[in-house]
Length: 597
Image (cartoon, rainbow, N blue to C red):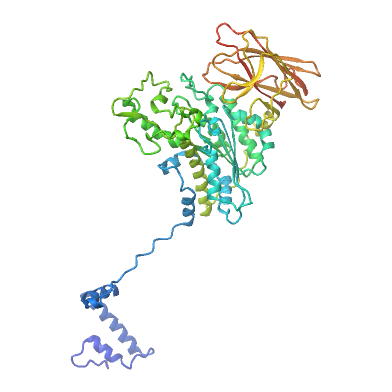
């Protein structure tokens, strides 16, 4: 119903009539105005519903049509700019920058598998925060790598060790202005050393190290389980909780506990390496208990690389572990690729790299294996294996450094993204292998460690007070010096003096070489020069495991029997060769002294 007074000229549409009546009537206070607006809006809405929305062309389309219909001389190409790419997260950009040199073919899945225990990342985050602020607050990063011959870089050319690569990464990616120092990673690797060797020397190591260490890398997975050896007939252990497990586990806890107390802000992590001998287990399980108890990150090289290696073996087994000429089987670095002899030190370079078939001869479940090559096939060389079945190649060292770098860089990225981290990890009030962590301090409070060759610390040489001509100081393998006697008749002797503050209580610990052939027996006598008390211990350098490593002999007992009050003598007397043995070698490598518990 239209209100009275509404005028509709002849021939005019309803919409036109509305517009006609709007002229001069748009008074906001007028009821007529509001009525006209409501009616007009209703008519427009009905029109859109029936006829559809009005056809409108975009400016770009109209311009394009105009260009097509215009004379050629007037045409001009119209370029519509592409949408701008989304802005990349600056934290991701920085992560990609510092990990750009990662080993080709190392996948995200490899990296994820390697981080087997994240622990409490608060200390790692502090390192990441320091790196993120390096441009504003430059300062040198100091790190320490401790381990066996793998960390030492046995067989690898100079500069290729994972510690060298880690140091280079810090200096390349986080440069410091000239004159303000350089980032430094100290290498404390030692042939055949296990984590107990480090625990015994920690107090001396603290004296050698600067007070502001940012990073500790502990690499003992190989030596803590079976030591290092190159014998083909390896006497591998099938049981996980082998004889001596508790001693090594206690040493692992000691090292972690004392490092946390001495360097509360330092990042401490395990790097778990492994050999190519599949029958050899590693101590990663042993370390994991201590790592979880004290919330220490664990980076596992074995978990990153060996799942693909097992798959490679499955594919190669029908062909005597050889590959078709030119066939890599799996992508780099997991498959078969040319041996890079330049990565091997000249002393081992002549023999080249160890191929998979040769390595598999060490596997005790493989049985007799012949490595003859069929026509059209060639040996398979895995890039991260080197000249033997124990040590990694230069590529293997590079991958180990990549895994550590990714743990640091990914945590730095999380710091950049303002991710919240746990509170500082408190040292547990109870121990893992002992009732109280404080007991670890007392059990390893060594005040003297004298060695025949450098192990972790600057050498305090083990000097003999007296010795017979049959005992000589020389190195019999890999620069491992020692006081050595080989006389098959026996009767050779050597004496060492202990000089500590008088009136105390001290426990001497003698370290001798244990091996599987050619070793002799001996007697050790401890004499206190003040009390005149004497204690004797019988020793034997021969054992069944096919490994050759120094082993500690505790010469006195805590709280029982004879004690050393500070001024004592330790004498080693060799016995004649036994008929069923190939030799009579006795090798003394270390004498240490600790306080009684």
